[in-house]
Length: 306
Length: 217
Image (cartoon, chains in turn blue, brown):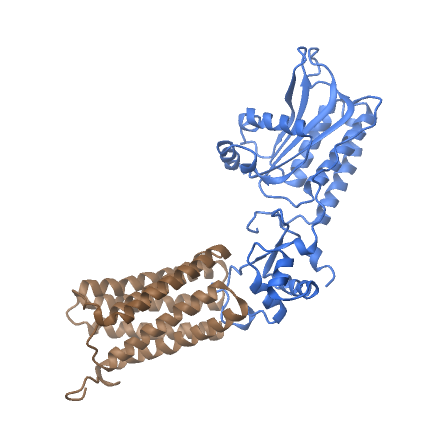
């Protein structure tokens, strides 16, 4: 595991494959669902299983007979049943879900400390809920109330906050996959009558923060230490040496903060030479590559031309 | 020792200590030079720590050779013991963590520590003699403690992944540890030679194991 705790087992291809697999299963399962919450339950369980999401929550907005809008937990799946429900469905988690519904944005995977209080974050971390991601799905379809027998809650336009808690930081294309799955599920649910139609078209918020893959020049390099050097492997052998001169210059220039453009200027080499040097360093597993937002980059992408 | 001179000579009662000091000097100097050369090519902080530590130990060994050959009027053993304590200590610290940030900070601290230790050599004429054998034994024993820490790191590495390098290094530091320990305990026995010579021999064998590790491991 790298220093950011990323799940290195899922590549971009794996995520695409999982997305297709889940959608295929969705189309097979949809005739068995009688209520939208059956679909939500299945989706939450599937996301939890396939993407190693430790806690999956779907929060809906419900309007009661007083006309008050409240966040309502429609579905929750705990991969680890020891996670206490009062923690998972606490007031501040509910408030955060409501805030996401208000902001109508996507929260890409980040550490829980960034959005929750220190106390809450500590509690979450205790159960391995180190990272979270969220998205807001809405459509001009009516969603029936959670309590199928309740008459006090009125049907409301679909507005669901998906809140995911993970033990490890997933890849940067994780949330776009989740959103795609959710959108497809909503479309199918509308077709199957699980959601009541309105006249207007199905819409979802634009991915205001959908990441485009950053340019090569903006990537940030970190040196990767050989943990076994001087312990299991002889540090004085020639294997320690970076034989390629350009790779050595680039490696020397790395400070863990500068992007490739800055490193090229510091090392006095053009970007093409830096790219070739980077491929050597990646092949020798001497560096890691991060986006400006701090997410680890799958280096297979950078090595695909070699 | 010639009459009226301060020259002890290479042979005689100091033969084994001289062999030990010479072997320690050559071994650590070679390792230091190689480590610094590779550091220039690989920029790995651990190599710098190794190079500086071994360089400092080689300097203490050189000092020991000089002290064994001629009678010095001042006490350089403060530098010898504390220099080796610091060197083994920094090697031990460099094996604990592989974090780039941690190792970079360790390098800075080691440079500062080495400067201070070298100050002990420069100021040797001003430093007092050891007040008693307990102080001397404590310093000698402390370096054994540092070597023991390094030994445990290599044993842990060997249990995780059995390599010839980690085995030879573990053997080396185990022998060096016991050799230094015997060298510390000699001050508490009526006949110090009973412990001194075996201790030195153990350290010599340990140095051979160290050489084998870096050459063949």
